Structures are given as structure tokens and as C-alpha cells.
Image (cartoon, rainbow, N blue to C red; front, side, top):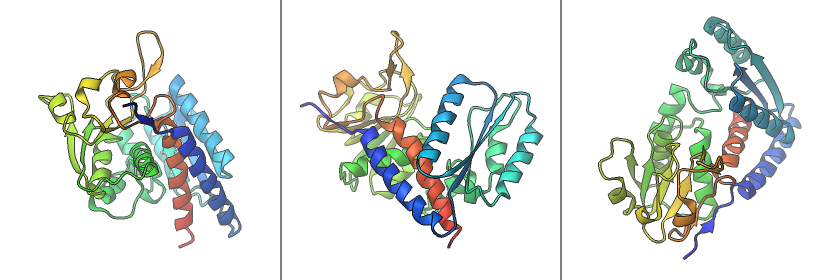
Length: 283
């Protein structure tokens, strides 16, 4: 068996085409979806991510505002900028790029964002909405994973899903989204006693710990579907995920590659959330 690859690039392109059409329809009603991206400091990876997000907005017909600040920016000054963006009618979504400099309390900054503009889905109100099944913004990476499963018409009802990782950004919301689709969910992490015993029971595995080869072929039940959220560099400096792709591909039925899998979906779902925020302004 060789797994079928779930092409994140292709799914993203299709979704972005739909987003651009919906944005055009909104413009005809006098609303241009607007996203503000706030970057503090000189983290090289953050600059790349931000550039890609701004370009994606522009390509989809959104209004984008990029604010770059030095790493000397005070927390109070950043909170004032967030307040101003909260009150700006041109801005429907606010994204503060993480990580922030050590002197800034990231959670305090996130909580300062108006939940109606929390298109990253990190606000405690968004987390609460997800947990209780109420309308809100889902965090972009696990939301993208769900869209990838949807693209292969995967019915999660009654399936056993194992999520490796318990972060607030991916692991925990991923588990809640899977629960909403009636999967039986197990969350594994660094303190899990026998990871292999659990992954061998899984119909779906989502690996999201940021460590190469966390999941190897001997840990996967034949025919399982594997979603690799990881983004790492191996010993040769090559981009890789959390999954031993070459090995697991020979056992699984579906698998996401790295690169070209979950990565493109994250920015796409940010666009989807921003568009939704703009549409709610018309309601």
C-alpha cells in the first residue's frame, strides 16, 4: 500500500478562489475585508510568515495593513495599537505575529483583541466558543487540517483519532474539532506512557509536536490517515514534518506531505476567518 497524498497546495488554491469571489461580492455591498498584521521585533521566520500573509490578502482582494514595530516597543504601546485597531472600521481581523519579545505578555496582548476580530482564534472567547460548539473563530492550523480531511470526504463519526501534541494553538483545538465531528479522541503528549500502543489503535493521527520522526511506520495501523502538522529541519537541513514520511507513506491510506501539506492551509483559513468577520459586519 502507498498512501494517497492530501495536497494542501491544491486545496488551498481552490479555497482561495472561493474566498476571492466572496470578497468581491462583499465589495459590491460596500465592505472590503480588512486584516491588520502586527509584527514586533526582527524574528526572521516571523518576517517570512507575515510577508506571506499580507500577499495572500492582497491576492484575494482584501485590504491589508502591516504594522512593523521594533523589539523595544513597550507592552503598553502595543496594547494601545490593538485598541486603535479594535476601533478601526476598516479592520475586520487582527493578527499579532508570535512569538513576541520576552518583555511582552503574549496572552495579555491576545486577550486585548476584540473577539469579533480574533481571526487567529487564540482569544479565550474563541476557545470557549469552540469548546461549547458556539459560533466563533477556529484556530487556523487545526481548521486547515479539518478541511483536508473534508477534501477526501473522510467521515469521522465513530473513528478513533489520536492527536499527538497538546498546545493551545494546535493540539487542544484539534481535539475539540474532531470531537465535534463525532470522533473518539485521544490526546497524547510528552508524558504519555506508551505512545505506540495508542497510535496503533488510531484511524486518524494528527502529529503536532515539532519534532522529526515522532511517528514512524511501526506506530501506524495499516490504512490509517495521517495529518502531519510539524515543520522542522532534519540533520541535513531539509524541511520535514513530525512524521517519518517515507516509512509511513507505505502503511497509511492518506498522508499530508511536508512541505505542501498543512502549511498552505493555515494562511488560507486565516483568509476564511477574516472574510467571515467582514461578513458578520453586514448581519
